[in-house]
Structures are given as structure tokens and as C-alpha cells.
Image (cartoon, rainbow, N blue to C red; front, side):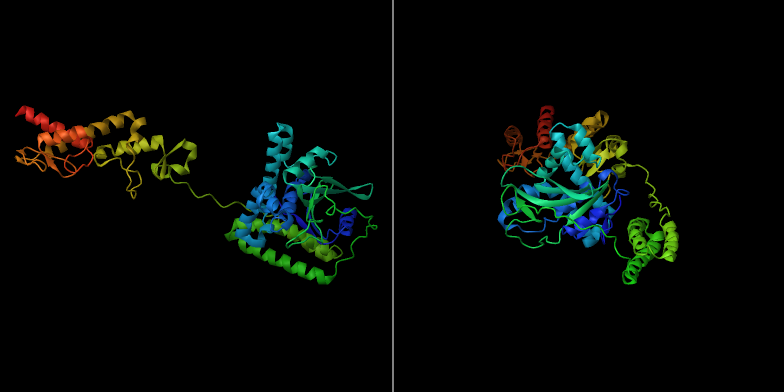
Length: 459
């Protein structure tokens, strides 16, 4: 996607008529770069964003806290993100125009989808619009964004305007002015637009539907269009200086930073149009610019992709095409990859289920084995064997005094550290807690106590 072009001076009857109406700042989305009026959606986004930093005291609730800001919120978020990264330079980035236009179209498309109009949704998401005679189409879009949408066109060599908005009396609506010139679209900014706090509604900032006092002005008859006078050298020189600076940056970035070079190339194409216009009566300059145009056709290959590392359990996230990723604490693995890892370390199950990442100290949860029956069985067998071995080790070798009742007997040594005789350990077993310190009795302590009584039967 390319950049819109700031119109330096009126160049056709439509632009002259708009200038005469007070629209002194025009931004063109030319059909050559934005075909089929696809510039309408970024132009609409720009018209709405003009109001986002202002304070309209009389309607501050709906403007700042209510439906208006909620409606344009997704577009405003994109504008803010590019502003944080690039400042005013965001307007020189093709991605900015692509994203705000696409988001604006998406919001409109969703509105038509909600009314079960798939044909209209597809048309909007394709970046296209209806003829301005389709009032319902533009009224829907205007009401969606709480806008008073004015679209200007030339008809029978006379400037005409069509207005679209909600019909509910007293509704808040911000003015958005757009012009259609064939398939080209113009975003318009009026010389009287207030960029600070505004107390009362008035054109070209905002209005209250059907409330007298803030209506848009009537179109005045325009004077006959006069072609702009030849550009003076005083204008040509700074234009050339800017172009030379961009061209130098392009050459410097061409080898080391292909992405930046491609972005500059887009800006150069746009400025080349301005330079050609400024030097249209300079035959020698036109000849030189032909050579520059060839340079701008240089194909810039995208940076070579970094060779991908072989697929292992440690980089499953880099291979999403290999299947569904499962989350285990902070890591993601494919089921097959995790199985191969666990199978490899299965002889170490005695130490728990080791995470594939060597530096990770967190063990995998035991339920991870639910989908691997063979590994689950092996883990259960090792765990039972370990507990049995611990049971042997957790009986006192010779009779000792019970920590609770002082009875001298072979004692069970629990994980809490208490040594209990058969009677006290039995009470602990059924109470699910050590009768001396009240710590909970787990599976391992239960095995120790059970093993104690098995030993007593054999003596």
C-alpha cells in the first residue's frame, strides 16, 4: 500500500471549488495507488482521528467517555501505536495507512455482518464503496461512528455535497469531510477547524443533529477554475533538496537495511510526483528524473530468512505446523516431542519428571503421563519401588522410645520427623495426621506404617 499525497495547490476544478469553500488542506488518495475508491476508509479514519485529541465541553460525556470514543477506539489504538514508535513520521509509513484503513473497513464490515448482509460485508472488507446515491449505505457508516459525513463531488461542472448522519434529534456527531474525484478520494481539512477546546458545537468540528446553530454552511458558487501558475525556482530548490536527501538515505540503506530502503523507496515515488510537478516546465529536469525513475524500480529483495534450527523438544514453538502445542508451566511442547524426551529420561523418573529445558528447575506435573500409558506404568512402578525402599529405611533398627507415649518398640519414622510406636502410628494412620505434631499423613507415611505392621506379623 502506498502513501496519500498532500495537495500543494488546486490542480483541477474539484480541488479549486473545495479550496474556495475553505478546505485549504487536501490529502489525496489517488486511484492509481488506491483503486476503486479504496482510499475512502483511510480518509474516513483520518477525518475521525482529527477529533480524538480535542475537548468538546458541551458533549464531553459522549465524546470522551461514551459511544464516540468507543466507536473509533480500535482506529485510535493503531494511530497511538504508530505515534509512539514514529511520532509525526507515522504519516510517512505505508503500514500506518494500511492498518487504519483496514481497521475502519473491518468495523464497517462487522456492522453489515450483524445485519446479515454478507454481500455488503464482503464489499466493505474488499475496500470498496457504493455510489453516493445509496444513502442507506453511507448513513449506516456515519451513524456507526457518530459522524456527520459530507461527501463532495462535481456534477455538471458544479460542486455538490451529500450529507449522511443519524436522524435522531440532538445526537452528537463530528464532521467528516471527504471528496470523490472519480475513483480518487480526498480527505479534507477546513481552515476554520478548531484544534483546541471548543465550547459550542459548530462547523467544521461537530454538530447536534437538527439543533439550530451548528448546521454546515451552504455551498457557494465557485469562480472558474484557473490552472496554477508555473512553480518558481524558490519552490523547486527546497523540493529538490528534500528529494536528494531521501535519495541519499535510500542509497545508504540499500545494502545494509533492505526493509528501510523499501520504505524510503515508497516515499521517493511519492515525492517524485511533486518534483515532476514542480519542474514540469523544465525539460532538462524531466530528462534527469527519468533516470531517477529507473533507480526507483530497483527490486529490493526481502532479507534472507535465518536458517531454521532442527526441530527438537526445545524449539517446538518455532514449528507450529507440526501440530498442537501443549502448555506445561511456562513451556510449550508437541505431544510427540515431549514423549521422546520423557522416554529418554525414563530411567531417571526416580528424581521426578524432569523438564526438557536444562535450566528449568520446575518438574512436570504427574498428569502429563496420562496420555503416555507405557511411561505412566513405568513411573508408577518406580515410584512404588522407591516408597517400598523408603519403608525399610523408615523403621528404627532397634526398639526405641515412642516420641508420644514413650513405649519402647520398633518405631515408624514419619516424614515430619516423629518416631511413633505401632499404636501411635496406627492412630496417626486413621487420623490422616501425626498424633504428635498434627502434620498431615501422606501416601508415603501410610506405606511406612503399613509396612511396620507387616513386619510385626512376621516376628
